[in-house]
Amino acid sequence: MAGFLLQLPNNIRNLSVFASNGLHSLPLWSPPGAPQSGGPVIIELPLDKIRRPLMRTRANDPQKVKDLMDSIREIGLQVPIDVLEVDGIYYGFSGCHRFEAHQHLGLPTIRCKVRRGTKETLRHHLR
Ligand code: ADP
Image (cartoon, rainbow, N blue to C red; front, side, top):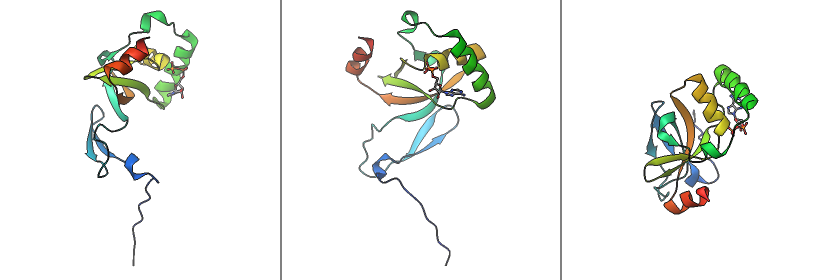
C-alpha cells in the first residue's frame, strides 16, 4: 500500500503555513494552541514602509554595499533583514547594507523577517 510521510519539526508549535502573493503573506494554518501573535513571519515589504531611525547615525561600508548589489542582482537576497512591527509600523535597525543595496538597485520591496514588538521593545532598540 502506498503511503505518505510528512516529517514535522520536533516542536510542532513552531510550524505554521502561510500563503504568499510575493508581497503579503496570509497565515493559513497554525497548530492548535499556538499563540496567535505568533513568531516571526517572512514577508516582502515596500522599502518606503520601513522606518530606519538609526540611518543617519551609522555609515555603511560602500564596498560591502556594492558587493551585495552584485550578489543580490545575481542570486537574490538569501537572508531576509530583521524588522520589528509595533502598532502596524515597521522598524528596521539592522540589515543596513542589504537595505541600501536594494535602494541602489531600485528594488521596490525587500524580504523581511518581521516580529511583533511593543513600544517598550522599540524604546529598547532606540536606547
Ligand atoms: P547588513 O548590514 O545588511 O547585515 P552585512 O555585510 O553585515 O550587511 O551582512 C550581509 C548579510 O547579507 C549576510 O548576513 C549575508 O548572509 C546576507 N545576504 C543575503 N543575501 C545575500 C546575497 N545575495 N549575497 C551575499 N550576502 C547575502
